[in-house]
Length: 226
Image (cartoon, rainbow, N blue to C red):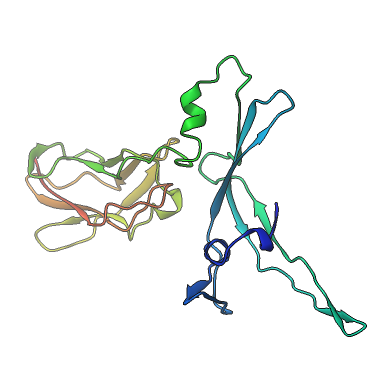
C-alpha cells in the first residue's frame, strides 16, 4: 500500500513511521522503528453501497525524497510511504473484507468497523495441575499448565517450566511438550516422583500468548505426593 505523505498530518506520519513530534516538528532518528499497524478503510461502490477492508498487519517504510531544481525553480515531488502487509503468525490471516450487499451483512458491522481491528483477547491466565497445596498426588502424575489463550510454542523451555523437589531444591529431570492447540504444557518426569515428598512446580510469568500478553508473575504450585 502507498500513501501520499501530503495527505497525512505530522502526527499520523510519526505514528506510522515510529517518529516523534515535538512543538509541531517531526523528529526522525536512525533508531526509529516503525510499529506493526493495521489499515482500515471503506470504498463506495457504483450502487452507493460500501465495501469495507481491514489489512491486519503491516509496516510502513520511511519515504524516499528526491529534490530537483530546474530553471532556478523548485520541482516539487510528492513523497509516499510504502506499506507491506503480511500474514499474522498465529492464524495466517492478513485481510478482512465486508460488503453491505452481502446477505449476511449486519448494519452494526459497518458501524463498528473502525472501532477495533479485533475483539480484545481475554487476559492470559494459567491453571496448573496439581493445584496449589494439593496432597496425595499420585507419584506417577504428569505436571500440566493449561492456558486460556494459545501461547508461543518456542517459549516451552526448561527455563520457563520446571519442577523442583522442595526439600533440597533438586531439579527434577523430565520432558516438556505442548498440545496442538498450544494451550496445554505438559511436564513428564523421567521417573516417578518420590512418595510422601513435597514438590514445587513453576511456570514463568514471562511466557506470552499469541497476542503478546503474559501473566506477569510466576505461577508457583506447591504439592505433596501420596
